[in-house]
Amino acid sequence: MKLPRNFFKPLAIGAPAPLRELPVKLERMIHFVPPHIEKLRAKVPELIAQVDVVLGNLEDAIPADAKAAARAGFIAMAKANDFGATGLWTRINCLNSPWVLDDITQIVAEVGDRLDVMMLPKVEGPWDIHYLDQLLAQLEARHGVKKPILIHAILETAEGVDNVAAIATASARMHGMSLGPADLAASRAMKTTRVGGGHPDYAVLADAGGDGARQRFQQDLWHYTTAKMVDACASAGIKPFYGPFGDFSDAAACEAQFRNAFLMGCAGAWTLHPTQIGIAKKVFSPDPGEVAFARKIIDAMPDGTGAVMIEGKMQDDATWKQAKVLVDLARLVATKDPEMAGKYGM
Image (cartoon, rainbow, N blue to C red; front, side, top):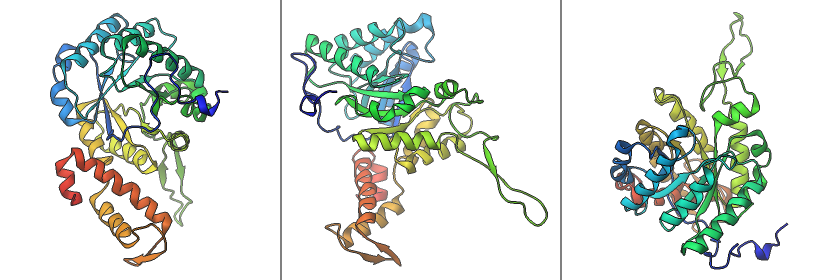
């Protein structure tokens, strides 16, 4: 076990010191771009103004014969654009793939100072994070990268979910985690081909009424795993995210899944299609009415102590903390989104 005093030491001579606190950034949506497709890369300049994170995807959904082109496309995309306050991420191939070493070494060499986060798929345990952590430190030192590249883990295997707490605390580079429902479903031998969302057969029945009729209520397949991930991330001081929602034609179900994740504590979600950007923006920006009420609580209890009655509801130090979460997020949203700033009165 690494001693606490060594946790924040660079893992290579000349590598940047690990961050002690995550940067305060708005990350409501992580928008995936397939960088091997030139016409989609050409849309990145307009995407930068629309989303909080642009991610160049090198893994799933990229054909094997396009892996090198996707890597080169991402490097070109990173060099060609000024991302400003918008995050620049990449999802590399998994650690047991033949492409991952070139992904890591070439990207750090070419655009290491521009890259904010490297997303690692199919993380099974802290050992996967330790490998990438050490390699990134060596490459940062070699190429003179000035700020540490953070690591974002995807939970998409049963073993990874079982080791979620250890993964969350594996490195000072840890940015957060995303739930990967499709691969996780296969890993668990779940009987579904859906990518995220509920399933009509995963349901509970209400008790029978006088006429014998029973209502049926569809349940959330991902509630337990999302909650477990949120707890691990909150305990470690990193960020949890919902991953992909695969049915682009069902905006209502996508919004419901994103909202469940938001209410449970997730900071954002993946957007795989342009139609999902607006959904994520809406869901992961707190409701103006909720923010207004939260500000009343904070105004009535400036130091967060005591108890007051507001609109017939008791408020105390616990609800003050809840209110502060909403108001702090609203302020962060307001810095990037003038429309929401007006709705919040900020």
